[in-house]
Length: 97
Picture 1 (cartoon, rainbow, N blue to C red):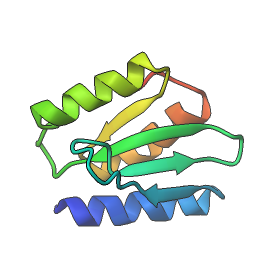
Picture 2: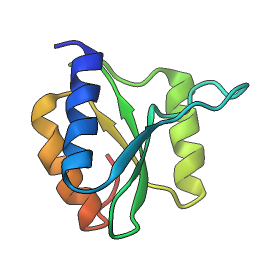
Picture 3: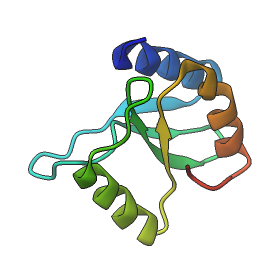
Picture 4: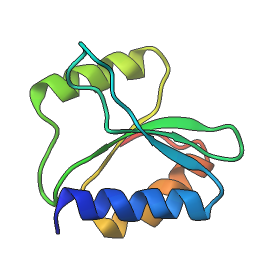
């Protein structure tokens, strides 16, 4: 399954929960996560979407670590089957993966 398909299904799932999954771009700052997710309970997290089996690049890992040091939650999604679990973790304020 391609990354775009996983990302599209994730965005639809967030929307179905009443949230938004904004495409996150940060001009001049490479390696930032793909999506900024805001759920109805006021929970905000970043989500990096990858094709199945792919891991974040070293620069992405570095940016994820920076965001986590700042107190942000950062999740990596590389399988359509993880969407429900990831959103459940977000709603419970769980730790990022």
